[in-house]
Image (cartoon, rainbow, N blue to C red; front, side, top):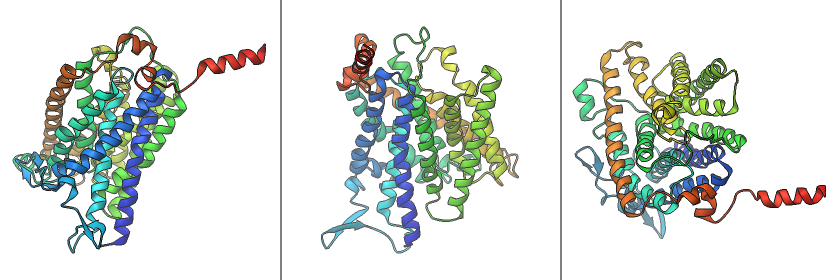
Length: 428
């Protein structure tokens, strides 16, 4: 047991926890003023419901239980964390082996924060139109049936892991350092499926949906970048050189993606926008996530640059194909996640096609991305359809027009009437 590793992993867990409030501000600033509280509350539900589900059985399905067909773990073995925690003289502590680098209980916390941020990402696609109660039930079902099994498949020796069946079949070890598949492709696929089933906001494609608070968007992007140091560097699971390099490669890629987005935006629109900078940051963070430990400084920046440019154009696809991905979850997280995951097959040190390896790594990265899309898409569709038929997803058209904050939460973020009256009284 090493206290330095323990301290770092506790810090990393706290940093990743901060990412969910970060995404709440990032998304909250993008919606109209009448929906910001709802966006913040959707992230509150992601934190609260996921924490409860993770404690009961989510941890066991992902990491605690024995593998079942390489797809999910036994939900009973680690139920209520009894495989991890034990009382000693009336005080609970962690159950650990002699060679554990840090207490097992810290890993429960660290992995719980990954589950929280993953399901919170989906909210950006569903902005301004869904019932809060339906969302809470969705979170519980999605963490149980989609996220936890996916984490098991990729990170706990399952079907999509480095030594799983697909890796053995294709002759190369699948690689996802910190969540290109488990987090970003998974969440974006779920977001797209949900949007296609639930439908568009009233006025989509006919009227502008402008962000109401761009400084909130920038605040959220900066918080995400800060939290991502726990996300990526924490995925080294030790205070070591790999963690340090993941910090460096994450920053290099994110900076390159920000510049790539901004220069592309300048060429196409004539402006460098704050919204573009924020979106470019997140695109770079997403793309480097699966590859942060295995690509050189040069290739990390190339991945970021490619991601910044590709996601810029990908975000416009919703208008071409007519799906209302409100805040570009598919364009940024889906396309960015696929970009980073697949480019390991080109740039991964010693394994990538352009970095001393062969086509095998490229093949396995493509296949695991496709399997994640298929699994997440099918299971999410089942969950969304079931909730559509039982609880219903949409608020009424009147409530959507009036504002979902009032309809669902009985509150407003801004009291415009009082402000206008006060100004009028002062002028008078």
